[in-house]
Image (cartoon, rainbow, N blue to C red; front, side, top):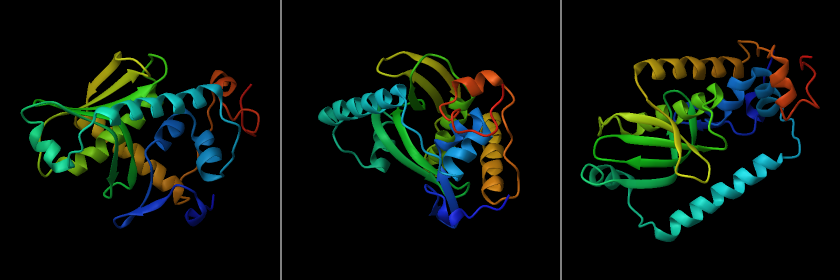
Length: 218
């Protein structure tokens, strides 16, 4: 399949590599053909109620955080947090080595670890959500690895609450896994790999693109 990357909205150069948004990893894990339709072909549909409510809640949390936050330079935050916990929201990260970029919902810098938090509706750690948060961890690691060796923890929190329902260390296994997935996406963007079609009819029923998909099951 021939793909013209220049016309794909969201792709941009980071360093010497064309990079894609980290949140794409969630759609890609759910169904590679959904990812193709949404991110490559640019199919648009009306946002679902859950999407709209999610955007509103993320905005509320950011506004609430900014009311109390004291601006601190990123490098200063790393140093200060070695003795006291600091929190950053909507932290922009990018990884030129692997060609990804994005914005993390929240990062908690504690004296013993750095916790990357993704706010999600519900309390189930779907594989698609894991891929997304591991992508954030990969990008953050590249940003700090030269100056900090604290372990990076991936965590999911129920949106609008303090309930952290999933937490895993971003270890070498998780890193290797997400690098393989990121590389697969880049190969697909280059037209060197086909997009696999989901074979689970239940996923198709729940997919917000099921009314426009020409490969849906069932």
